Amino acid sequence: MLIGNLANGRKIRTDHLGLYSGLPSPNLQEPELLKPEPNDQAPSCAEMALAETQSLMVNRMAATIAAQYTAVFVLQRQVLHLGTVFTLDPPTARSRLITPTTLNPYQQPRRS
Image 1 (cartoon, rainbow, N blue to C red):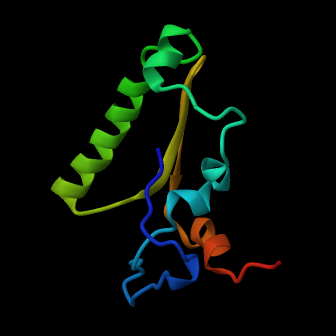
Image 2 (tube, rainbow, N blue to C red):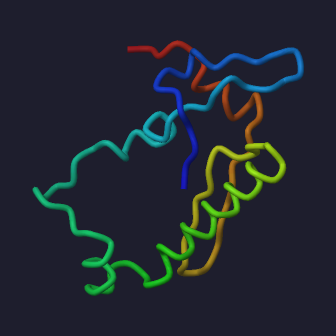
């Protein structure tokens, strides 16, 4: 589960309060997301669940994390994390806080 809205991380700006103007888009955070699947047609979540290659609870876990992010945004007007990576075997989750250290790699010019 990733949060971001800027295709160019160098456009992220910080104001005098330390608030950020945007976050790097999910494809900047995880470039592998845009690589095509080896086969032509990637299976849907439902197909993977039926084939037992994806837990029945994956979509529920992703929805729970998204709901929590939404609740914090609506009730507290804050976005505190770039995203949360989770696995259900064994059940673990790790969130990345929005800090200068986590945003710095996206703000640097890319080297070819």
